Length: 292
Image 1 (cartoon, rainbow, N blue to C red):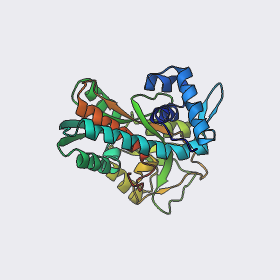
Image 2 (cartoon, helix red, strand yellow; image 1 turned 45 degrees about the vertical axis):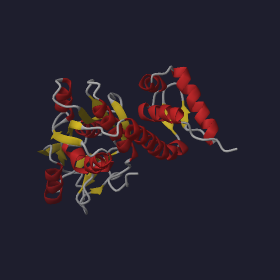
Image 3 (cartoon, rainbow, N blue to C red; image 1 turned 90 degrees about the vertical axis):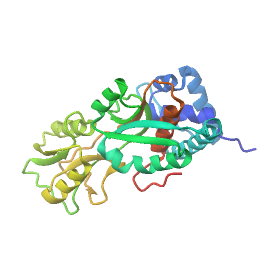
Image 4 (cartoon, rainbow, N blue to C red; image 1 turned 120 degrees about the vertical axis):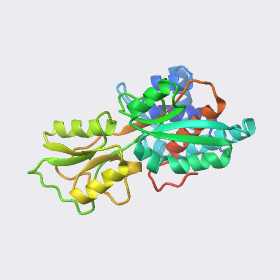
């Protein structure tokens, strides 16, 4: 007899996949570490295969786990949407949402459109800035929700997913290892910038920052016209640019965590949108991925 995937098990599975740590995952779902471990074991028994590889130092997701991750996000999104629609069919109010320029350009519009379709009485007011300042605005009560990026060793908020970073440039870009690398980056404080510069320092590759801007449009234009190089999350790479990973002089990059932070106001429409954002961001593998 075929067994069904259980919602509680999938929630714990997503928490472990997001945090890559059973202790942190247990805190996120409000259970003990041993309870979460048992839940993952039950889920592995249901699917018949291992979902995580565990050692004393780390937790990594298997290929089977990666495949289940896509479906788990869809199942939980559908479950939460159904409950929200039944329990809060008239969700209404203003959502003051903060996000970096690249997320506001590429990730959020289709998600917000879907949420608006399900809850037409919601209104959005979007502010674009760096994550540090946006989180400060959230703390001060000037925003309700913030979408932010974190270093994988300093995660915070509700983790939607981990995102790979790539070196990107204009099509046909040819590197000259004898000259300093011309970089086009977000301003100081950006996690992607910090990871890129740390990687270059480790291989002692000379560089200079030619452009420092919060505008994803200006970054693309600068790379197309001035042969600059940047580092971007996989899901926000403009279609006019190309990935140049693997070339000599471009070291491997760590991934980053995309998180959703919410104000502790208890407002039901804020919680509804924050959960929907986290679920749908978790479904998106790249810009072209269709939202379920």
